[in-house]
Image 1 (cartoon, rainbow, N blue to C red):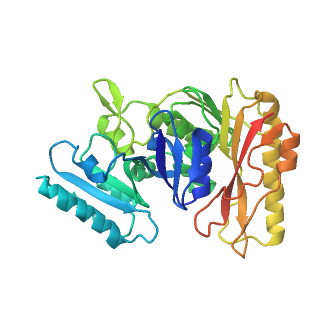
Image 2 (cartoon, rainbow, N blue to C red; image 1 turned 60 degrees about the vertical axis):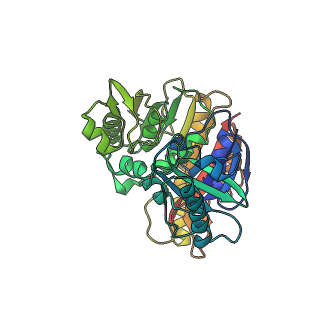
Amino acid sequence: MRYLAVLGRQPEISLAELSALFSRVSQISGELATFSADKEPSINRLGGCLKIAVEISGSPLDYLTTLPEGKITVGVSDYSAHSSARKAQGEALKLKKILARHGRSVRVVENKSAVLSTATSLHNGLGGFKTNKVELILVNEKWWRVIGVQDIDAYARRDQARPARDAKVGMLPPKLAQILINLCGHLPAGSRLLDPFCGTGVVLQEALLMGYSAYGTDLEPRMVEYTEKNLKWLTEPETDSARAASGRPVATGGQRSSSPCQAPDSLAGSFQVAVGDATSFTWEQPIDAVACESYLGRPMSLPPAEIKLKTEEQECSSIILGFLKNLAPQIKSNTPVVVAMPAWLRPDGSYHRMNLVDEITNMGYNVMNKTREGLIYHRDKQVVARDIIILRKK
């Protein structure tokens, strides 16, 4: 089946994530892409997608008239050429007027721009099947209906409610952790994912919530302690009110069920962490995939001078290459390895990458994205960004 994805703020990364998981991915505009999937994709597992929609076979009016009895809430996002808030609102009001003639009560979600923001869609409950709250997307006379909206509240809660956090070692966003895991490609449920720089355990947290087994190591005992604390918080039973407050599943009738704040779909619950230097540690088997944020160097508030940049680059490359050399003989052929490496902001606004492709190739890896154009994850003017490299063991 064909689906439409509304891409995140860095479309190239969103497209890479979709391409790793689905077939026939095609970018149709700066914000939109289509893709094919055998079963309905879950927005909760896609860190780089804001919304997912399916095409309406007939007119939007035909679809809306089939909704169950009761009040209808409808919003329109117009991604067509020359779209505007006024045009999008006009389409919604036109539908409301016709539906009113059929005796249906309709509330229209206000357009402050041509497209509804993720927050607006989420907080109005738009999207999903068997609901009278609908978001319609118009793309050059073709209509789609939204079936999933990214739960930005869930991401924020699982990031901020974790009991052990340390801003000094960097704050890996849960969205990016999901993307790094997804760039490994299709992994069977229960696959064991390794993060050899686990920090406070964000990648391992997301791996568990995506139904995988999590295995993490870190050089610093304090980080391993933080990871253990966070993963126990994630997996151990608590009162329903505490689980809901943290954005995790609430038990209902003895079963885990989705709460409005919980984004991923499952919780494997199996994890292991240990203190270990990634450049020399011997990991337990099996290792089905590796996803991590490597050592990013020292925190910086301003672009570094050339001499400082060179020192940072040498230190970071030594650790990363040492890790990959140590890992290579411990994993099987075709094992995916996705690493977020540092890239540094320069005064002209560009980012300086480490050029390690030749060394990594000589260690026994295929570099799947040698240029890595567009795969630098960063906020506006962020000095130390994440440069994503996707590898496969030869």
